[in-house]
Amino acid sequence: MSDADNKVNVLMVGTGEYTTGYVGGTKADSDKGAGVVALTMFDFRRRNKVDRVGMCGVNGKKFPGIRNHMQQNIGDVYDDMDLTCDTFPGDDEVDPEAYVNAAATYKEGDVAIVFTPDDTHFSIALECINRGMHVMVTKPIVQTLEHHQTLMKAAKEKGVLVAVEVHKRLDPFYADARDRARSQLGNFQYLYAYMSQPKHQLDTFKAWAGKSSDISYYLNSHHIDFSEWTLADIARPVRVTATSSTGVAKERDIDTEDSITLTVQWENLNDKSLGCAVYTSSWVAPKSDVHSQQRFFYMGAKGEINVDQAHRGCTVATDDASFASVNPLFMKYTPTNGKFSGQSSYGVKSFENFVDACRAINAGAATPTDYDDGSIATVNTTVQGTAILEAGRRSLDSDGQPMDLIYESEDAHEPISIQPHVF
Picture 1 (cartoon, rainbow, N blue to C red):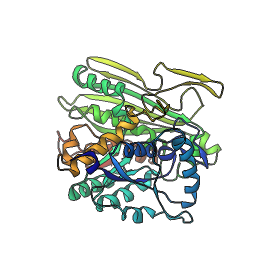
Picture 2: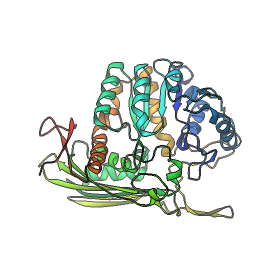
Picture 3: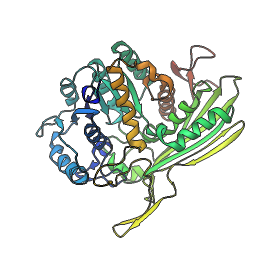
Picture 4: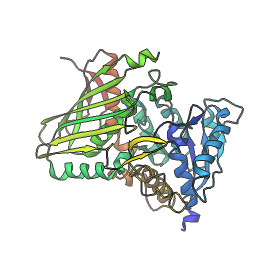
């Protein structure tokens, strides 16, 4: 089957920073001003991987501004980019459930890519799964273990691929660290991970910050996924304790934590020895040379690794912008000979791997469970991450009481419930 005969239609659900780069009526003040998802899907169409492209939001009145923004930042920047895109709801409508009508215009085997507030992921993903669509959801895929289990069951019944978009798995630094940890460093001992974004992100996310989600779900999810991916079949999380910092957001009348730290006890499966991981995330950092500080230190029984994902040894300063440490490994926005040339960037590869997997499944060359091998962060292989994040939220809401993750047996890898720890 040729590429032209095996293209998929894509519905992008969500119209914000990561999809379009359009925030508050203008270009986002971040490293994603041209967006990621829409740009990538338009490029996939240029490369004969994708046919129809649609975009769904809540407030259709934003679409004229979004179209103009995409023309200025994509159409006028890159050659041969067809920006044709069906939009839902209509330009004069506001409809929180527009995704239902949007998904109804797609067929089985098509693809939905969901980048919306965390508390909406479950209902949108389930709607698309039930229509036979393959679904990729930004992290966290859902906020509760129960919802995760429901999506797993629905995906199996419908025979579709459901995955979490966690692009750090495609970062060559993280991928190499993962392989070194698994092959050379022995049992897990300790990890410290930190990730932050500047204070103005509180304004970017003010519609949901502290109302339906928090900074741990938003940022700690990255390094928690790295741990789950790295320690698959090696260790499992057994206890979560959360603490927080407050003050800055509340001064802006946003009732949420500034920073959240999750301390997670991991149990090595081979001998029941223990390791400890500390995940800290914040959205009250000062503006600096990077949009997002992100780094980790990993120690195993036989060695250690340090990775600073924010600083790759490349800095840029221009008359129009301040000094910056840039990371073209994530997204390469500068065109080559007039064309978008970021195909090797891991921000793009994350979606390309998923779309290619969906095309292979549609062609009968693969099955959804083929990708449970760690090549894609499938719904079946990311249960621990959801459990840790939910346990962290429950610990915070219980004044820091530890939460135990419960398993069916001593050697089981998948948590089945969460219970308050009894001392």
